[in-house]
Image (cartoon, rainbow, N blue to C red):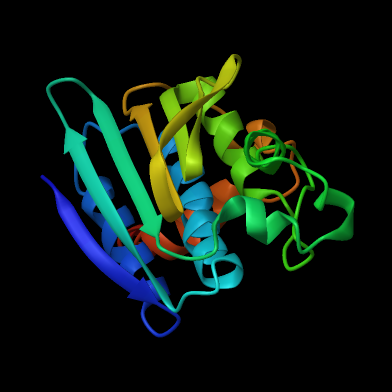
Length: 201
C-alpha cells in the first residue's frame, strides 16, 4: 500500500488528511498510534513549509499489515536543519552533527516555530516506534527514542525524515505529549465520523 504525494501551502491539509485516512481505513492499525502519529505527521509537514525555504515537499507512506509496520518518509530539498537552526543566534555556533542532535530537543527552533514537532516525534518513536532517521546535509541522526547516533552520509540538499512504527501498540497519546496538546480530540474531530453515533440518540 505505498502512497506518494507532493504537498505545498495550498494542499498540505488535504495531503495530511489523505495519508491519515489511508491508515485509518486499515482496521488493524491501533487508534492511539494513529492519533499521535497524525499529530507528529502534520507538524513535520508544517516544518517543511515553514523552515526549508522551499514551497513544497514529498511524502511517502507504506503500511505493511503482515509485519504491523507503518513507514513514513517526508523529504525536501531546502536549506537543511543546520542552516535553518543557525538563523537563531543561540545555535549559530553548532556543527552540522550538533544541529541534528539539537533539533529533536524540546523547544529548539530557528525562531519560526515552537520546537515541539520533532521532539514529539521522538516521543512517539520511544513509545511505539522502531526508528527515526533525520538526514540533512552530510549526516544522519538515527534514534529509537532512547539511544541516538549521528553518522556521516552522502550529501542531501535539504532534509529527509523517515520514521517506522509498530501499528499494533497501544499507547496514551496525550500523556506522551505531556498534555501540552490534545492529540486524541484533534484526531477524533477530524477523522471520526460521529453522525452514526448521533443517529442512535
